[in-house]
Amino acid sequence: MKDFRTIWLNESGYVEVIDQRILPHKLEIIQLRTHKDAVDAIKNMTVRGAPLIGATAAYGVYLAVREMIEKEFDGNFLDSAFEELKASRPTAVNLFWALDKMRECLDKSDNFLADSLSQANSIVSDDIETCRMIGVHGLPLLEEISLHKQGKTINILTHCNAGMLGCIQWGTITSPIYQAHLKGIKVHVWVDETRPRNQGSNLTAYELTRHGIPHTLIVDNTGGHLMQHGMVDMVIVGTDRTTRNGDVANKIGTYLKALSAKDNNIPFYVALPSTSLDMNIRDGLTEIPIEERDQNEVKYLTGLRSDGQIDSILICPETTSARNYGFDVTPARLVSGLITERGVCEANENGILSLFPEFSIQSI
Ligand code: MRU
Image (cartoon, rainbow, N blue to C red):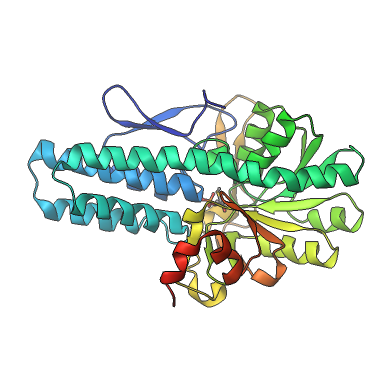
């Protein structure tokens, strides 16, 4: 686990990330030298996944501080860097959380360069430990199912990528899975391909392969059928933003999985770091901004040609228009529980406050 992570600093103090747009076909590293590079990497989804978006934005602020010092810009430069980073993607609350942390740090700093770097580094190292703890707390849920099934393989369905590629290491949904696998519990993962950008087939399948976890790729509409036939024991997904009431925004299509799980009496869990909680809002449906992306992500499919080149092909009449909503909201009533770094709780205000009492003062 330790030798593979999604973001780090190189010897020259620049940020490096894995280019997630070309996985699993090519493993390439991209260097981010300016805050604009960080903005672009978030926007064009070189990096994605709520915790990694937050970490990249944090390093983006550190890069902006570096530019400001090197080029002798004034404080307005830093303010506009914050604004550009804030506007890079709208749904994952980790982005705004990380930027608030960086702002707080700079507000009381008399050494911007050292302090912004150490704050960004600690956002990253905290996320690693947080994800490890999500696994520690999620593991008993898997152990219980395994016991119930007398050691037979547990079938877990997931949507999108809430693995280490969406975080720094461990991942959220993958942390209990990796820890169960390390303990010898038999796990198998149904991987939704997750159109339109295929984070399931490109990223989740890639990292499960790297970790030796048995898995099977399915098209997005298969989950309901599998659940009706007793082929899913549990659904675990990640989240980009979960409200005070426990409503969960996650990759488009998550809601349909939750409905099928409810109809088939299958536990539906959300694995999240507390940095993905937005305690300032309650109603996910009306209050969470849902990103709408370029229609060409729906109209074109990207993959590997037989000559080894990555290419895109059109899959509809050229003039057909498409809508591309990035996320949907699963109402709290469909969520069996939240798996966090401090334990598992009900998806509602009392549940969240039982684990994170410090959020009660921030009442709305
Ligand atoms: O559009 P993406 O790839 O950034 O969407 C990612 C997801 O929906 C993840 O499930 C979520 O960010 C959780 S990552 C631990």
